[in-house]
Image (cartoon, rainbow, N blue to C red; front, side, top):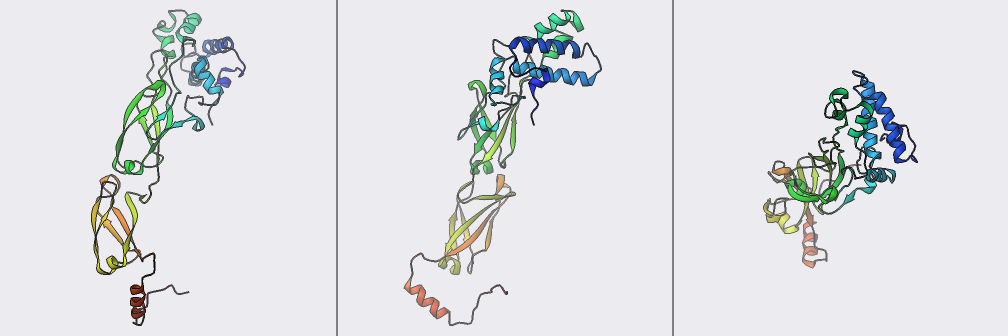
Length: 300
């Protein structure tokens, strides 16, 4: 469960911008690492309070948090994460608006410009914070997940980036785009974009480990006499040799046609009879039925 920035500052949701600023000033004066050096608990509380202040002092991010669009870390909530066919948009983590407070000014007011090495030193160094990580989802075609692809996606503030989807990615896998998240605060490093991949189901391919599976319908003639048929694979069509006497359930292997060109493609055969009755086939089966051949059946 996400933490509550209002609780971290000790203010209510109805607090004004001045209330938020005063609450943070009080905590900063009490918890700043230059005031309580070596106190890890106080330092963690100070970092959490600073993160809360960064979120709530920016009207844009505060509004999005209050509406439930982002969590306390600035991550998109699932219900608000936008998806598109080959892209996704996320707006959490955008840089502070013009109405946001400057932390350096707060520390200068509290400790003076020479405290802890000056605003450029001790106090200001603690106000420099890494930007928020931004999370969103990206829909990926099954074929692209097997062989790889390049897609252009939209990030915060209308930015676009070309993303290489590696061959062999799986459903639910998360890709990290360094420096593509929210802007840093007070010169801090930008956060990352965390892209969760959602692989679309395929009409006839399915994945099992490193193998790609499919069912292939063959005719009675192909099953009895054998033959060569064209078969689709994630990397293109190939010819497959069906041995004479093939049967439903037989599995043929296509080497190197599986995930990332390393696994195999497994083709399960299914013998299909004509959809409409064929009189010649009826006569043949009646004649064939007089022989002694009886297929194996389960014994109950």
